[in-house]
Image 1 (cartoon, rainbow, N blue to C red):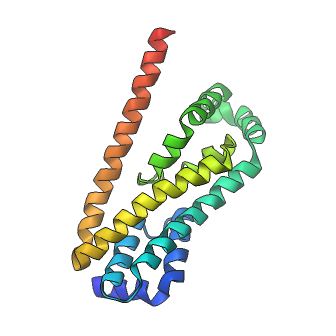
Image 2 (cartoon, rainbow, N blue to C red; image 1 turned 120 degrees about the vertical axis):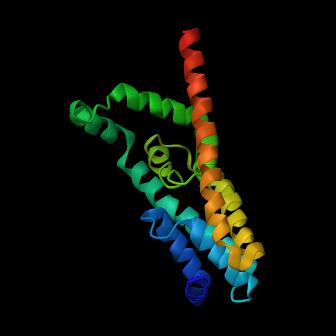
Amino acid sequence: MIEWATNLVASGGLLGVFLLMVAENLFPPIPSEVLMPLAGFAAARGQLPLAGVIVAGILGSIAGNAVWFEIARAYGRQRMRRLIEKTGRYTGIGSERVIEAEEALRRNGPAAVFLARMMPGLRTGISVPAGLVELPRAVFYGWTALGTAIWTTGLTMAGYLLEDKFHLVESYAGPIGLSIMVLVFGVIGWRVMRARRAG
């Protein structure tokens, strides 16, 4: 199975790695925790250039996230607020809650975007609210590139160094991402509680 999957990734070349990472961020068919270690394993076997794999993975991830960010940005905050006002009684989400979320993302935008790139389930999800609050493109793309570079390089190098034991990467990557998520939400919760007590 590992042999087949590795050869499949390698057969697509760097363009294949790029396109798979774009797809992973649009409608996740293959998580990066599997794809990039496989590509790293292929690089360790000399089937793909290591630096090229890392660059292709980073660019593919940024491109996939850019789609959601730009769509949300084009849709716009005002139209989203009007939609929420119409559907709020059915969804339970009021415009006040949306305003609070927007303010939180503006305050913590760089950190939220950066950390989300290393969290399973949030890597793509953060792009939509970031677009809706019209986070500056320089902030969004800069911190997306940094977080993506760390995550993608780490996964690729793990596959490269572990070679056919790459499945260990997936088993550890999930808990690491979950730990980061718990830590981030814990800090946010603590800040909210402290603000309420001060108010």
